[in-house]
Length: 127
Image (cartoon, rainbow, N blue to C red; front, side, top):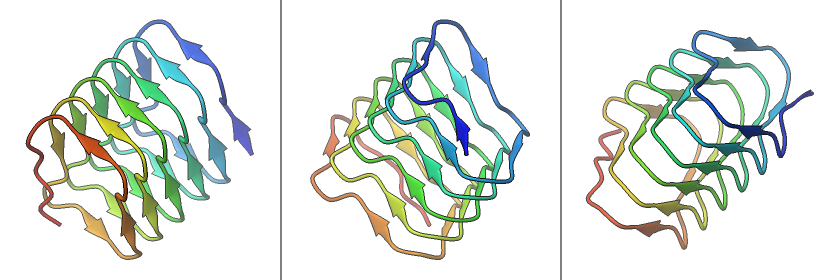
């Protein structure tokens, strides 16, 4: 497992076009600036449980081949998942979305869980 759990990313963090072949754990991580995961491939399970994204989080075109866990996350700015692909279940249970969320043209092949999530603004979920 690639372990980034509880790391504080003080500046711009870019994992754009990275490939994680095994499980990866960002649980409890804090992203102070923009987090860029555009076109990132997650081959195993992706854990972001309890992560805090204070600025924009960009997952456009990301490819999640297994479970994507975003439970208890706090998204303090724009969250983008346009054209993202989810092969397994996606969990946003108890997440807090403080700004716009966009899922245009994304594909979820498993189940999508947003139970007990909080939305402060209008979001676009065109799946």
